[in-house]
Length: 402
Ligand SMILES: Cc1cc2nc3c(=O)[nH]c(=O)nc-3n(C[C@H](O)[C@H](O)[C@H](O)COP(=O)(O)OP(=O)(O)OC[C@H]3O[C@@H](n4cnc5c(N)ncnc54)[C@H](O)[C@@H]3O)c2cc1C
Image (cartoon, rainbow, N blue to C red; front, side, top):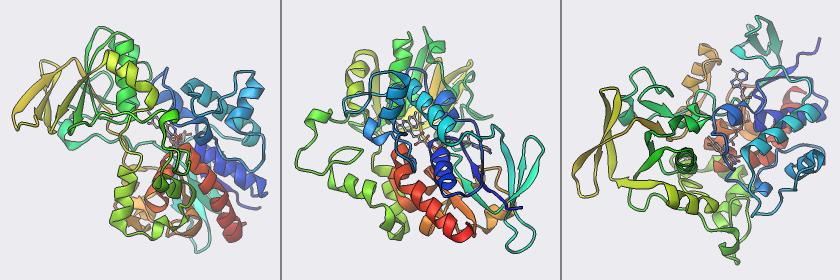
């Protein structure tokens, strides 16, 4: 019997990769909950920062764009840079894409992946249904799962880890921010997730302060009609650097290691969406600090010690602190990858080192989406990265294991 390829993940990257592999006639088994990160780990009422042009899940066939979904659903087409996408619409688009192009998706968790016992024997997977099977190749598209990052200075108020009901949580642990109505809330961070979480909680009735590191840390992008005209267009705005990173990520992996990691962190870094500015200024206070020094808990309430720009130590307390402090790729946190496999893989600062076609240092094991960002650049953190990643990954895999 021909062994299938296993795709772990049913978010935009897993679904897109699976659609490309299927179109090449490669047998696949695809695992995961469709669009679950968007449904459970992002706030209800969120609007996407990415424009419609940058929010397509790449497919090998025509007719599967966000605009196609809008037509099929009978809702107004989202196409221009001024059209803003509600997260609920994007989830429905992903589910529609899945039903059309990856109908055989298995809503099952992969518990473990280990290398086959003999050379060339592929990979052994265990599912939480108890089933064991062998795959000739594995694509890891597990996205944000397990990668939420809580900085060390906040850990003192979250000894057993962040929890939505404890003093400190991570932004990924909230779907319904209405639970903070009437509460005093601090949101730590200055990226879109921090700023939008703050606005949504404030609009739901919370008193919200954003604590951000650095002077002028809270800022918002320019609206489409104010983008510079003489620079090339890219899904992220008009700039030569963004154009190169969006359309030519191929040479990225040949840059020096420190440069690659720096660019993934800094390019398209903390900046609110243009349409959020007014709502933010109306509802949310900002406290700029030189840094958060530590966090503790007093009488069940979180207490942040911060250093001001004048060098003074100050204390800020609230009913709850949300750390909107992003995600860090760490192979060690991908518990489903067997220990032997994780220790054998070539890594670069905790991220898998990828070669041509998104292949890891182990034949037959591929990574796409966020874990590929250190090799192929910041575009892999966003849905539009599927347009570059999926056809290349599928082509490489078909040539090597087809
Ligand atoms: C608040 C927020 C807002 C964002 N807004 C935007 C935006 O506007 N535009 C944009 O382009 N990007 C945005 N992003 C980034 C976006 O989340 C990623 O680009 C995208 O979700 C990555 O897709 P993915 O398929 O790699 O992973 P995910 O969407 O995270 O999907 C992961 C999949 O893996 C599955 N999975 C994980 N572990 C296992 C396992 N062991 N077994 C089986 N299945 C497993 C899950 O069930 C799920 O199906 C945002 C991120 C956040 C946090």
